[in-house]
Structure formats: C-alpha cells, structure tokens
Length: 383
Image (cartoon, rainbow, N blue to C red; front, side, top):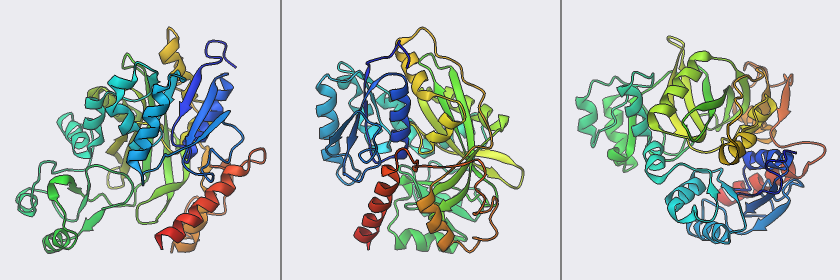
C-alpha cells in the first residue's frame, strides 16, 4: 500500500479485458478503491474477486452508443478520481469528451486532436517516413487503384484499414491484377486504407510499451515478442515474452516524442528478417493486452500513472526482467488445433518454462473460466 494514493477512487473501463484485471490488482496494491465497468457476468473482471466494486452496465464494441452513455454517466457522477480506458473504443469516447469530463476526474487519455491523429495508421507512417524512423514503405495519400499503380511501391503489398485493430479488413495482394480485383470484390475505399509494402512474416512481431509523463519524458519501457497468433493469419499474440532490444526502445521513444503522446503507449512493430530492422506498424494509446508482462517483469505502470497525477516526480523504471512469458492458454489451444506448425514452432508449444497464464491463478480462477464461457458463446453467436 502506498499512503500517497490510499483511498483514491479509480474507475476502470472495459472489464472484459485482461489488462483491466491486471491494473485492478496493481491499483489495489497501492491502496486505491477500484471500480470496474463490465458488460456481462462472464466478463473477466466481473468473475474476479479483485475489483472492490463491480458495475454491470454497457461496455461493448457492439453498442457504442450505450457504452458512451454509461461512461458519461459514471464520470459525471463525480465519484471517481481517475478513469482509465483499456480498449480503443472507450479511449476514443473519453478523448472526444475530455474537455467536458476533466471537470469531474483525471482521464488517462490523450487530448482529442493528438488522439485522433495518432489513431490513423497513415499518420503514424507519415511521421516515421518524414523522420527517418523505420517502417514499411507506405503510400499514405492514395485515393484510387491508379494512384497505387502510379507510385513506386513494389508488389506484394498489403491493404488494411487506417483505423481499427487486428486482422479485420487485412488483404495481402501479390499482383496489379489482384489489386483491382480485390478493391472491386470488397468494395474498398482506397482513401480509407493503409497501402504499404508487405514485410515477410519470417521476422518476429514485437511491441514496445512505454509510460510517458505529462512533461513528455519516457519513464518506463518494456519490449515483448509474440511467437504465436490466433487467428494464425494475423490475430492476437497468444504467447508473448519480454526481450531486450535497445534499437526498438530508441525508435519508440523518438516516435512518441515526435507525436506528442503521453501516458501508457504501445508501439507495434515487425522485425524485417531481411535486415533485422524493427519497423513501426502502429501505436496504441492505452494499456495493452499484455500488460501483465510489464507488472511481472518489474514495471508498475499503475504507480507511475498515480505519481504523474499526484506526486512531484514519476519513478523511473527502465530496467525489467527478460525471458518472462505470458500465455493465453484457451486461445493457444486453438492455435495448436489450427496451425500446421504445431510441432515445429519455437519455443515449443509444450515448453512451459518461465510461463504464466494470462488469466488463471489458483487464488482467483474465475476469470479463466469466465473467458472460456464468453469465448464459446461468441463462437456460437458468430456461427
């Protein structure tokens, strides 16, 4: 418990997410009074014993209007000192209402102009290319197929939405003929897409996760690599491990400074196996899904958030443990069933050294089972 922050009331949004659970535990450890907004009784945090208070309301990408109404109502109640989002949609809601809501609580989100600019992947690529920060070659001002063909980009290329996350709307295109056919088949508005060179997938996907204080100083950063994904063609990482790459830290630090970002920021990259260069893909302006790796490796971002708000200085936490692994076991089983490389992958699927489950613990098993049930229900709904 930290006497500086004891009793501070923290509202954590997005109770479905695993990072919300980790931050709830971390804020509890500081002596804060935690409340979590959930959408379903099978949300990760609703099934956990750790939140001191749970609100069953609306918090879902399927009902953005309802989510916005609940967030505005809770923040305007004046009951909370700090409000933290853990998804892109709730962070967007907070950012777009920041001027209005800041009279009631501290919102851990960037101002709307900065937030909206950084959420556009084309803007991120533009900043990288203008400042010699490595990224895939990107045609960020294309409006049509003809604009793409008139550029000097070489095939294969990828098209993906300039806003959004995951593999939704992702297309790998091998030839000029495939490009025209793809745009017509899926009725794609090229001006709303990122058009960039395809980086061979032999290299690792990595992420650098920083905390930047209100003065613009990077106070902590840890890097992890993702070794397995589900869906296997470009989904979320299901086995992640902390690694040490100074070049990744340097690129990330320069990028967030150029873009004027602060708070918890994640920079996603891919290692180009052709020259071992980490190349920027996008930024996330919220605590990332694998926040547990940071806490396990020795970086307490919850403490840094509170120090940035209430203390004279934020404690630097630049050193962290490497070789720590976090595994999303339920989804990793799906990877094993679907992947043709199930027996060839490295580290081995059967290797559990230094590995902690994303959700399961003997002292609080509820979140693991809740996530399993939630996933099964989602599968049935989508079918």
